Length: 485
Image (cartoon, rainbow, N blue to C red):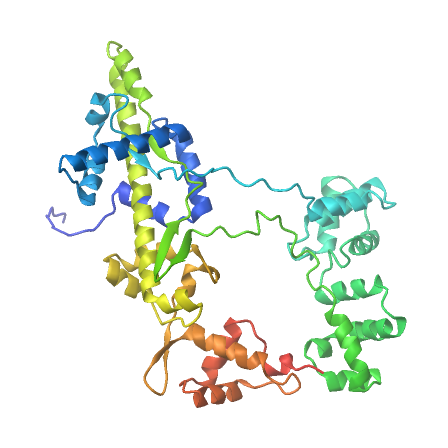
């Protein structure tokens, strides 16, 4: 039996403006610039302010503020923000062209053009150029180009060569054999850089040794070690290796050192300066006992609402399509105003979060060390925002300090308690673990148990499994694999 009933529920939903603000908040600087460019293309009522106009507007604003101050009229910052938010479509239609302008990201007087990047030849192009110098048939050149196209960023061929040959033979009606494909791959692996397109680390190191000009006696022993005893080498079973090669440890040492000089990732580092550069979102400068926080948004263009569309409306008033045009402009106006307000709100939130981080981690910003335990909740309680908002601000953002560029997540960590009851950041504990490992005897590496004992003697209550967890997080191998001859 069907029944009709009424039910009252309380739900919390985000408005489109709030969703847009949260999306902008989590964007890092470069992504924000791209998002603004996309919005400028989509919304005709949104425009970038010309630098000369922006300078003139700032001069006018300063003159107005001085005039108001002389009359005893002072407007609070909250009232200014309310005035911007209450700027309606009717205000827009009634304003003179030189009247109210909703703007975002005021121009700071610096050039916003990006630094030109030098022209560079990519690794792929270099390999293509070298292929043309080889004595290859047309179909073999096609295969070589396909192999190069399947090389990953570390320089390895991760796709099975027989599958590459099979796809080429079917798609381009070729007749390449697997044996000839192996020969072509061998030629590619001996190009510059040597070892490129190797399928395993073992193959990569062997190729580099084969094309090198190291002393023959050491080179032959190194090749035999890699070909026949690679597992013992990776596990650092030096005594076993010396016994199998018929050498003592003193004669094995130069062979191991020779192999360690080889490049395990021949494709690594093949990035342009622009791709390999971190653009900080904040810049923190020291001014005596204070810190000045600057949002690094000089490449973010100042925005305002385009007044030219009011003139369009005045010309369309007598047209039958005036209502449709007005509805379109009204929607675009609201979208532009929301976007500008979201940019301004993002700027304010990010600065508040960064200033609070500096207050909580003041010792670090003064000395470059001494991080205190801190979680997102600590910041959220100070600025009166939700933890998810802090997470959006922190995620993927960087700050430039006098001690280097750090990701904002670097300042957040769990805590450990010392024997005296003092709370210490786990990042400081990791730093101590690394210092202990760096200073250990390379012939007698310290176990996780031994490291835990040392830290406990220094007053840290830490278990062996915690040491192992932190060591693995820092990608430091176990004691056996750190041992050297």
